[in-house]
Length: 329
Image (cartoon, rainbow, N blue to C red; front, side):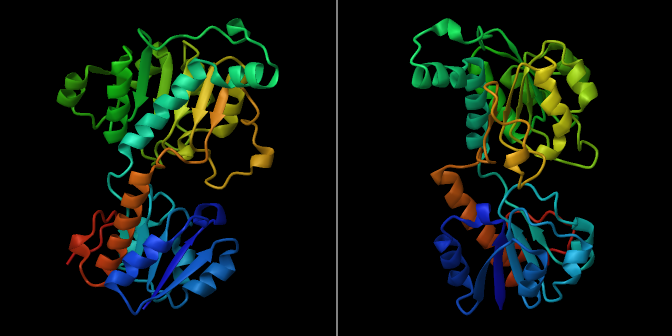
């Protein structure tokens, strides 16, 4: 049996010792290959005789799957799986597994960290104090202050609710837009459910926590940035594809938003040399790092490997989360 661990080099650069140990614990005879994804053809050659694939971001459409005739299971070591053709994998009876809840608290903390850093102008003070040796609080724009301001959450799943809890602790009014939201959960957290137009009109801070679907790709467009009546701080720690990046670049320049905190960009492997969002004191960009902690990394490694070994040993029903409609038994 052959298992390939593959992703973009920047993603795959970490120590994979725990993955190897976890996979070999269940499949001691398996050949495990680490393949940095830099060239599609080289990747397909490696996958010709592979039974299992462990990845986070490699695109897997019909044409790619055609080049993997022995593939029996795909394990995504992330919560998102929008780059995988789920219908095609289902047709081929290839289970696609993703990780369930493993970084909810980390992403919520990261979201609030970006918000606080932007509102308190920490990037400005890093320049004026560290570089210019100026001791002037008024060198930065006047902060809004979180207490009494309004946070609008697009998406009210586990992460959205965790952000809401933290925002309420800061004394913020919290609105949420999500057709699947449970009114009882919202009431318990002190969150007001509202439609998208209300959030865009009334929010001082807008934070995206939606899963990416074909319906909400580029949801945050020029038109929606123009609807943001209070020129909010815009936060995205979900999926970059939810935002029209060209419109986002224009939004702070035209005053539609006053700042942005982004853990994701539209491309999973962006060209930073040509990114119009960098080099701005009112924009914070982090490299899809909101999930990152010692606890979450251990959970990610264990869950993703267990998903793969369960599927490769005929125990699909034990996998944490199968996201396509293959037969379980």
